[in-house]
Length: 217
Length: 106
Image (cartoon, rainbow over all chains, first blue to last red; front, side, top):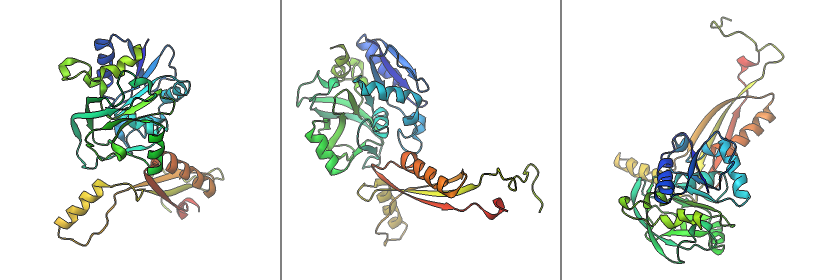
């Protein structure tokens, strides 16, 4: 098992993800530079948080054209596990692997605080370590985390069980209290909260461990 | 006509490709909340202008594009407007293309 962690110019949670996986869970990782075109020997992909390409134009808008993401698209289509955290979630929506878009927080402020989340794992392969309806606590740190999609699209996502993570107290104005969604097949998960910052007990909580440890199941 | 140094006149050559000037206006779709626009509207009131009923913040992108003809320019500009400059999930865009300047088409 080797997890590929993408690195764009401006990524800043790539090393946090490595520490959570390798240091806390013993899962080997390798960094994948954005210009790379091959994912040989990779069993799962994490698109980490940060400000890829400075978030110019829109968050994730430039990153979506990175060569490595063409390989990630094929990897996801073949059922490979793909996790997008924060900026990684924004990249997944910009590239169309997940529906909707992430927009400026309703209150305009960058929010950096712990958030209570309700988990509805459904068929999402990343969330099988949690019980249905379980409440967990993960840190959030974003300025553009307000999930936005048409009401009909939201209803479809809810009917399909793709709204797998919801805020208990909506911090940013997301429609449907959406904190994270999965694709219909359940192998792609995008979420604004940071599970990798809740794996080492020194960070104040380990509720993110079951998410990353799902790779070991 | 005098031209600045280094500005050779190649526009008479049949191979010259015209440059189209374009302006792409990107705006948030009406259904999408614009918190920055609301904050700016509140600031206008603090400046003493109370009558602002609606204020939405978008982007204007100015481009110069070389293309063999207007139809090609139009389709290329539509492609980048729709696929790069705007995210159709949350934004609308409109496109204005100017004919190549007369100086470029002597």
